[in-house]
Image (cartoon, rainbow, N blue to C red):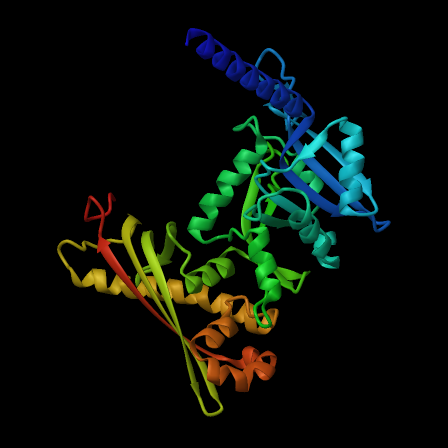
Length: 389
């Protein structure tokens, strides 16, 4: 019996030892990418830039990156790029340069440069989903400059710069100033006959005296796979109000006396309902929002005069409505693009009516009647009532 147990243990040890050895060899032959950027050169070739985990850091815990101002920053990544006739050719060229297979399973995001976005990003999407073993949930971003500059940028906060950008993207999406759109989300939008794809925007700070910082704000609007243009932060939050994706953040407006008041958003929701009658089409949007006062300079005392809260609610309603109007104007007049997915909503909720207007949707959308009702609820004036002045 002891002999059988000994043989069994020997076999198990051999299996696990062999398995670990194989895994070690495989990892040693991989270059793990954490961020990927794609550009197009003036000659029409593709350029791939990869931020790769650095397997050989110095004794201080990081490999020194490039300077930003007067500060030298440590980083746990190295950056490589390659140029090729196709996306896959770029990958092959980079593999040769590294002497290792480029692994995409840990990529935090993909950035596409403006020039490539202008010409179309079908090739990027096809390569990402077809054979790169990249998660379809990987966020897709566009920059107004070159993706190369975003991927090579260093950070004073994170030794892996991709982590900083990923954190900013998550927070800004919750605030409504950008939107997190995955590769799969974008592809699904392409399959829609009415909806226009949108993605978040990332740029570097324009302050030349500051260390490089990422600015993740705004929206890139597409027609199929080609870039139409950009929406600013307030237009973007207006779109996110309609989609019900503003979770946190702040609203600053003026009181009746012209003093600034800032509300902190607790939660919000959106309900969209199509209204279709004979030759009359409308979208009825109801926005509900709850907030608290977090800053106030006006001589108001909500505790003493409760009616003040109602007046402030109206101010807050107006501020939200104004952002929504900016988004609607951008969609209907600036881009002529259904960035809200209204066509899909009508198709879902009113399938019979949709069959009559599907072919005319492009003509209907620019003049579609969009009725917005905002109902905000100011829950608390804060821990103090009167301003500290």
